[in-house]
Image (cartoon, rainbow, N blue to C red; front, side, top):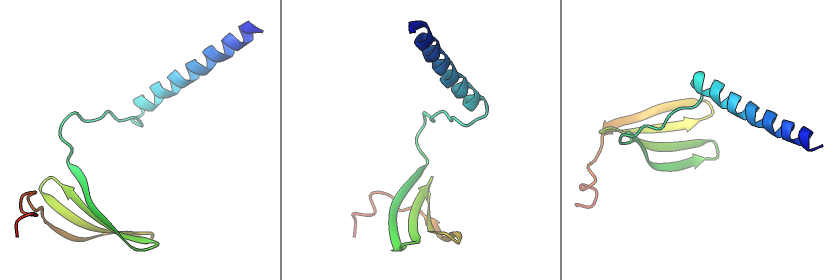
Length: 89
């Protein structure tokens, strides 16, 4: 009885390790980048239940995206504001 349980536990752990190995080899598991992150979501606004406006910052550019079931559209692309400019007015 204990032998069967031990065998089942060993087989289950072997399957998990094997699946993780295969996923890594196929590129399904990505390593986290240690450097600074390049993408940041600035704001998000729901227009209606199916569409959303999202402001995405990548490097020194900001992109305004319209996301919806019919597809995604880049509405605008502009130079990103510096973080110090937002408070100055």
